[in-house]
Length: 71
Image (cartoon, rainbow, N blue to C red; front, side, top):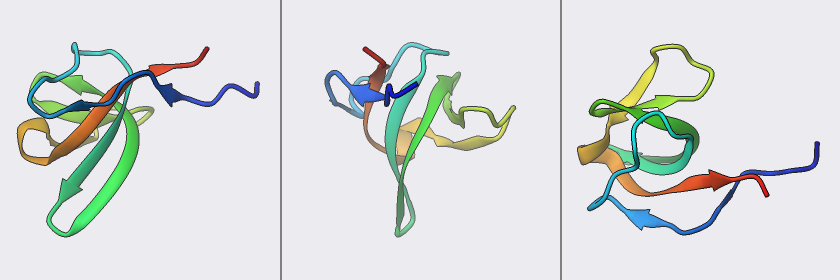
C-alpha cells in the first residue's frame, strides 16, 4: 500500500476535530514539538495504536491539525 496520510486542510487550535476521527496533529509540549497521528478523545490527544496512552490535553498543546485523507 503506497498511500500516505495527507492533510486536506490544516486547522488551528481554535477549532478541534470531532472525537475519534483520525488526524495528524502538530503539538508542542514545553520546548519539544512533534507531528503525530492520533485522535481526540474527550479533552485529550491519543496516539494511534497506543491504547489509552494520551499525549496531551489539546487546548494546551495543539498547534495545528487536519483530518487524514488516504485518497
